[in-house]
Amino acid sequence: RVRLHRAGGKGVNWSPLNTLTGRLVLVTVVAVIVSYAAAFLLFANERGAALRRAAETSVVERVAYTVERLREVPAGQRSAVAEQIRDFSLRYTISTEPEVVQSAASGPGARIARSLSERLHGADARAQTRTVEAPSRRWRVRGREADGGGPPPGADPPADAPLVRITLATVSAPLADGVWLNAHARLPGPRSPPFNVLAGALVSVLIVGVGAALVSRQIGRPLADLAAAARALGAGETDVATPVRGPDDVRRASTAFNAMAERLGRQMSRQRQMLWALSHDLRTPITALKLRAELIEDEAARQRLLAPIEEMEHLTEQALSLARAGASQEERISVDLSEIAETLCGELRDLGLSVSAEAPTPVLAECRPSEIARALRNLAENAAKHGGGGKMRVYRSAGGEAVVEVIDDGPGVPEEQLAKLATPFFRADQARSQANGAGLGLAIAQAIADGHGGRLKFVNRTPRGFVATLTLPN
Image (cartoon, rainbow, N blue to C red; front, side, top):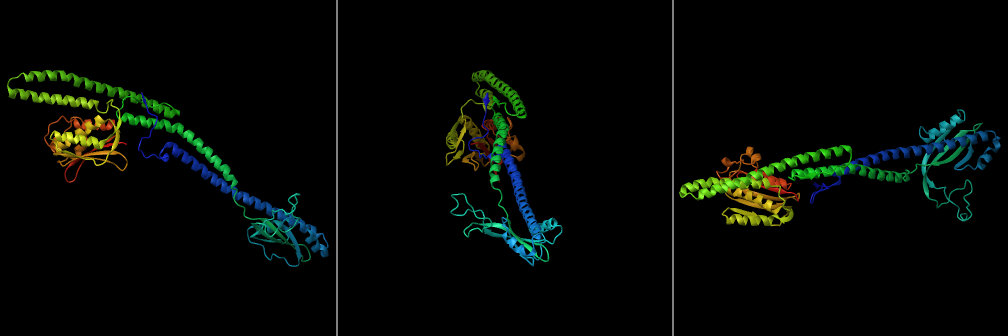
């Protein structure tokens, strides 16, 4: 059996996005990327919000603790005690007027003021915040790196420290007797997104993409094999089968196709064998009739008998040609259609037919040369006999297909009969001329075109003429 494992062909514009595998992988990867992007945005937002809330809560707790501690200190010692407090990222001062006249209406300042007020049992706490760029405090004092030393508590960063975005919070809370504690805190500023999470997301996308490709390949390859086998069956091959593999649904489809292809193959083989046998068996009585007619002495009577006998012989040969069309065992090779057209037109001109070739450049196509020559000969003879002469143009289409056009200047064919021209024994003589023929020439050309996976198209020209176009895949 002929087992076809590749769906693509030479010269076909192939794109992975046109395949089931490519589209399934693309949809899966895009879905994963979108879901990860949404999760990343939510995570980054919630992570930043959680860190800011934690820092704000820490500031509220430390300021509240300091307020409660200073309230127990005598009024004359509060300033000294406040200046001695070394709290990381917090500085305290005592004043008779609050540095924050009014709390912010919303944002971190409003949250800090509200939380501190609740912590201090309803005291008039106030807070404001602003985002600035300030030197980073994550540094090590030069000269102490060897022994692992660091900056002293509460020390300011050096001038050459890198700048970072931070949130400066100013908090004012009442102590007693019109005295206010002012606190200056450094809070984490807007944090950059956690891009390190993207590395894990990228790995996940790659794993999901590979998994989707493997799964879709289990479906896509059997379907590609099935499509290739269907094309081969449509091209006239009678012994075609596709591998049965893949998921159960695809296996059932492949099994059903193989059963159908086997039945069609047997039916086509029986029809061809019957036609061959009939045509072959007719040769014997035709030859006997021809020999007996030759023995008749009356020339007029002999010619009257020989004419229908020769017509029967021609019909038998054409029937055999139709039976063999598309089922030849000839090997396909790459040939120049321009050369075939030039040679064929030369032979037909020697026979007295008005046929010319227009094939300035070589056009290579993979085909069975003798069958293609037979199809072109039938088209050229049809143009010469019915259209008074023909011209054979050979070129390559924009899509890379090999095209042969046979053009004549005859009366054309009625539009309603164009679809019937390739039907065996159909003749449109009343539209063109009263030429003799069995009506099998175009049917043979159609069968040869189908056997090569090509197309045969008939079109009327304007205002007069007829075009038969044979297209072969590259």
